[in-house]
Length: 187
Image 1: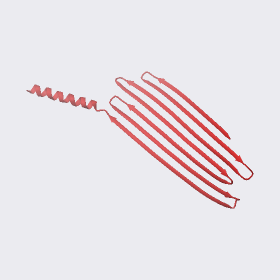
Image 2: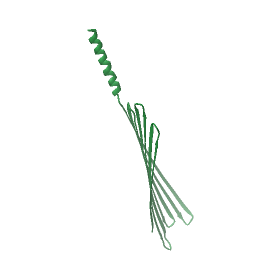
Image 3: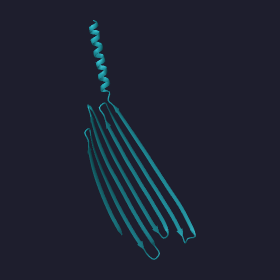
Image 4: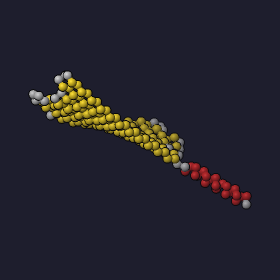
């Protein structure tokens, strides 16, 4: 029996500042590996089971601020990726069974804020892969091959747009006030 667990985390932060721009970038990557290996053998039976789970998560945040005269821009990006992979292999007397499962989850969120309007982007990707392989060999004379492949792809895209009409309302109010003043003067 063999067991191995491996975890790695890396974080990087970069800041750039100029006269009108400040940019901060932070990247965090986490790797997690899990291996399980089981081997059993007798005179007539050979069995091997191999299980592997692989999880990867990437966290990415970037914030950029621009200050030019009276206008302020804020750009923030949030990025998360997760990978899950599982391998199962079993050998029993010339019978080979392999199962491959992969789950891919990606979340992308972007927020853009400006003086007059707000935009928010939300994107979610979900991908699932399921693969099964079955091989059977009997004395090298009879070969039975069955291949099953299932692919599931789910794509979810959400777009949210928020527009602030405060300026338009203010303009309308100003126009109404001007009209009222003109009417009063005419009277």
